[in-house]
Picture 1 (spheres, rainbow, N blue to C red):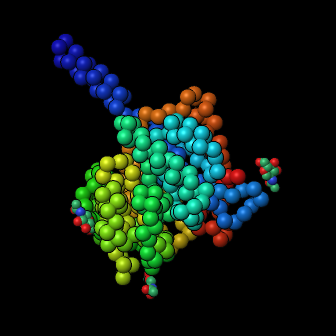
Picture 2: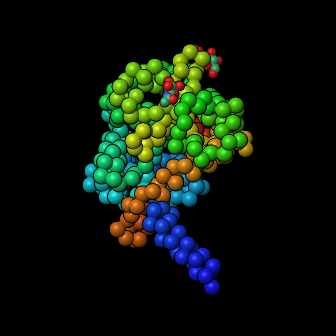
Length: 304
Ligand SMILES: *[C@@H]1O[C@H](CO)[C@@H](O)[C@H](O)[C@H]1NC(C)=O
Ligand SMILES: *[C@@H]1O[C@H](CO)[C@@H](O)[C@H](O)[C@H]1NC(C)=O
Ligand SMILES: *[C@@H]1O[C@H](CO)[C@@H](O)[C@H](O)[C@H]1NC(C)=O
């Protein structure tokens, strides 16, 4: 039957084509953050909300620990399909956190130049660090934004928001669906003045603290590098701060942000050399603990 065989051909072609162009088993690295409460040897953590955020959109997670040798970071880079630089408190100029982020950032840039796709994302402090790594300057200004919910002020068309439902885009622009918790920000005017930053990053949203208009979402023009000054991972998974929105549209915002980044990771074909090695590295080897009464996080993973 001709119709059947034509259908079969299209089906097979689609299968071959899509499996050739898409990695449906992406693994994403999350960089650990400096832990300031010293617990014996334990000096780094990963907030579980970042892990759940990615898992909910179809990725598995590998923790990327601080103070590891360059060779280990390179091996991981060649094994995973994307990298998240989280928020937290650490120096963007010189810290264990900055060193590890810088190594992955440079590897991602080199990879793209060779035609190898490796997406990278910075949130909050990770976002601020993106600007330092790109321009080698700290162009930040103090902003009055430690604990506020803000609506999105979209400025330019983007890859990031292209696939978002129209209704959600309207809600993001009219409701306060993004939680901000930062003391510093990149003024829009400083982004414009700094040629390197201006040519590298497209500003896709801004916000204001009432006085200063700062950049709140970016994507790199020529690299799969993205960042938010706000916290998309918190809406669905953190409950301890009044500035974290939990409305239905806030939860959808979390999901669509993760969906976008995981789809970027599906364009990367790095993989572990063996299943054994992959199993050893996955986050499933670790257990999160309930955050202490003073912690801003519901659950964290603690590392040495
Ligand atoms: C610190 O780490 C070392 C090696 O990882 C371990 O042998 C030692 O027991 C740890 N000390 C404490 C106080 O946890
Ligand atoms: C900072 O913002 C808060 C509202 O989020 C406002 O109440 C406060 O007056 C602001 N402080 C300054 C110094 O502008
Ligand atoms: C992007 O947004 C910024 C901030 O509003 C604006 O200054 C700039 O002109 C926009 N660029 C494009 C290409 O639309």
